[in-house]
Length: 189
Image (cartoon, rainbow, N blue to C red; front, side, top):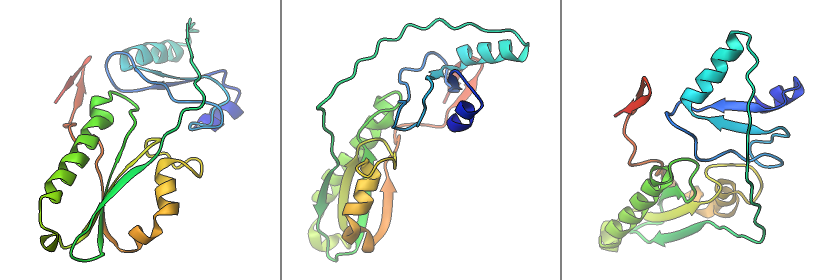
């Protein structure tokens, strides 16, 4: 959608996220995901609807934006994994991404906490009682497959022996989230 918008001459792309309030994170541009050459801004539901309604009424909304950007170089990230041997070499793989795209306590600190709690639980079970070997791993770059070194792609390319004998993969994503419904300007769980 971003590429189509750029090809059609868009000066910017506004993404309306169906959450009340303001959005706390923004997608990246440039050569990363999303591959945008124009500014891409995420708006909360109320602001997004107001702008959309103005456009639908053929009004020309004007947006004033002050943006402070800090670019840091030399930072490194990595996948982390640990293996809990079982009675066989058949695998159960449990994964959680270690970064946050929105509301970090849910996305994905809750998944990370679940991953650690499951590792602690199964570490107390005798090896003979664990039918399968368990590999617990975290990925960076959310679930992004972009780039050869992105988290999920790195695991796929560098851990083929694990996947060759994996019976089950569990993605621990937003495990503290409950079903939510946007009613008016509020989330109802």
